[in-house]
Image 1 (spheres, rainbow, N blue to C red):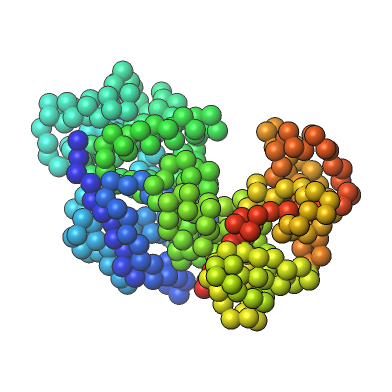
Image 2 (image 1 turned 90 degrees about the vertical axis):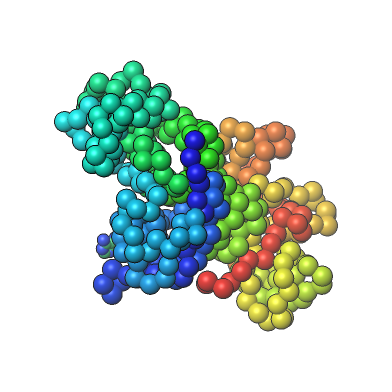
Length: 362
Ligand code: ADP
Ligand code: MG
């Protein structure tokens, strides 16, 4: 239905007085992709989105939309539309009037804007509620109306700030699927701010992990999950153990790291000179309980806590110089030879499941 535009940020900084919220970030979001800006509260996601929308001035740097520099353009002339966290519907207007509002402001004649509003309501399956007021709708329905209202301007990019955060868990998952479907039907670029890694993994073609105003990694979900670039990404995604040590040897793409507690582990990655500090990440779901005497990578840990999760069991362990290590064990393997809190168990993983992380931002 619409045209899509690539979004490019070139060395963009946002300061509020003396405080810097976004620090010289550069990023290219391909046209027609679903991009999630992901990170903890306060890391600069909303500031970045508002600068793309034109609702916030850019302190330095440039933003391009489909090749046009939009840095100094007002929101309505950028080809973007924004959907806010609180849907910001007008309570005294009907659903159809809310959706048609921006066309009314542009002076589009009534029959034309009513027809377009109905088209948009059909797109989000709300055509039967056109005459209602926002207070007569559920949270999920209000969200659909807000979507229709944002899309009526035929934007090249839709910007969504935590669009699912007000919904209950069940509706959240349903609306998430609808957003993804809508994006692929419309083919326009979506930029969606979230602090939930699960949401970002489910939706995005491109995940941009932010921390303290900087981009830690921008990559497809599978890359962020399997090859986190930095200790922050590995910890934030929550599926890796991050351990620190010192490089003691390099052979090909295998780096040997001497851990602070005396263990020596091999990991995949770029070699650094011996003596350099390094962090490695080990996938929690790839850690196994080793066999006695088995020559493996790993260490002997003491079980501090056990959590049953249905299809898997989460073990929290401690070892020499390692305070908190997580192993996610499949339920079948766990219950075949159960383990108790206080037991000492050999932990093992394959060399490929340990990777060296980039320390650039540490
Ligand atoms: P996020 O959306 O990731 O939670 P924000 O972009 O909202 O992060 O905020 C980033 C930082 O900028 C925070 O420290 C926040 O307090 C600050 N900030 C955001 N908006 C303003 C503002 N209008 N005035 C001053 N500081 C702000
Ligand atoms: Mg925010």
